[in-house]
Length: 267
Image (cartoon, rainbow, N blue to C red; front, side):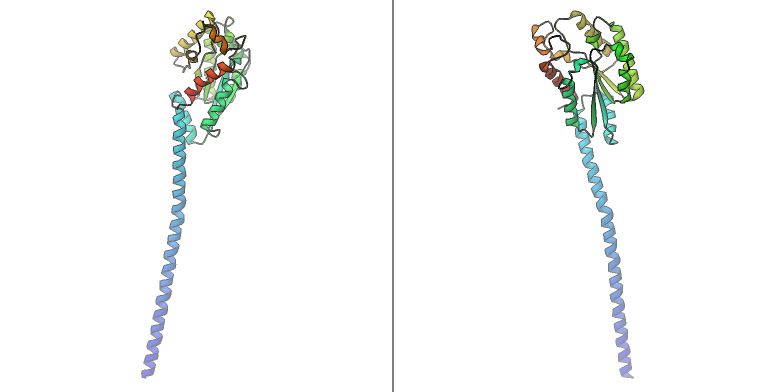
């Protein structure tokens, strides 16, 4: 009888130890799996947050370069960056843009290098020997509107219009162009700038003065790069222009470009 009781006690002891072992093993497995699941859930979220923070820092730095832009343009650029959309800039004008390696081409390269080609694109629209009436009537305006630019730097053919198109009509054509840009893109911003100065040219200088007054009256952003050129009454200005004064030469392109670079890329 005693031997039976000892044997039974041993069996019960072994069974109890076995139950305790398997219970502990099962609980340890559950705990380990929970830890793994938590780690798997937390790590991607942390990584995602870090990437988002890095992108926000990059966007803030890019926006700092644009601090001279009109407020409406800064805001639309910010929204484009937040939505990973490319901001579109159009540079529009006559042969005064300078063609290949002219100031407009130089500015395009600078903007895309500074802001990044994923953030913005710059398209040049140069129409040689075109007057503002022809620009409106011959379909060039529609070509630009089809691109739906967000910001337009516009040289409104003032020199080409000189002596051929009345100042008032030139201003009306500017308004027609701006309406077309707004219709294509409700948040589009147009910035005006005059064509380059020429030697003497009192009538043309008066047209440019009227353009500046028109821009101020209509609350249109206006970039007065003439302030950086030599006095038009001085022969020195010829050193910055082609012989026929239809466009600036290499020296003039550099001067014009530097003025615009300082505006479009704040330092």
